[in-house]
Amino acid sequence: MKKFFIALIGGTVLLVGVALLVLPGPGLPIIAAGLAILATEFFWAKRALRRAKGAFAKVRRKSGLKDWLNRRWFARAGNKRAVPLHSAPLGHPIPKPPPASTQ
Image (tube, rainbow, N blue to C red):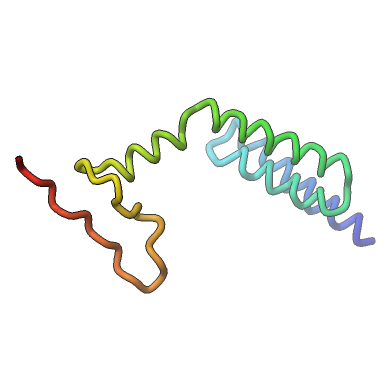
């Protein structure tokens, strides 16, 4: 019975994700969520999710996104040791970069 409900919920989420590929909305993350739900009970979904993660990682490596983010967050005003905005601990203010020196 559990497998049936997992298949029903995961299949529904997967179909909504496929519909969102042509409708306005986040189709790919919804498809990934549907596969993740189905992967809890079905081996084929686990394999498809693993392949999708690998393809996403490959695209991310080839796109240069990590290098772009490093240049954007760490090279502000020539300060190579600036703390990126997303790494501030919870409850602490975000440190401001020191002023650029005018030489």
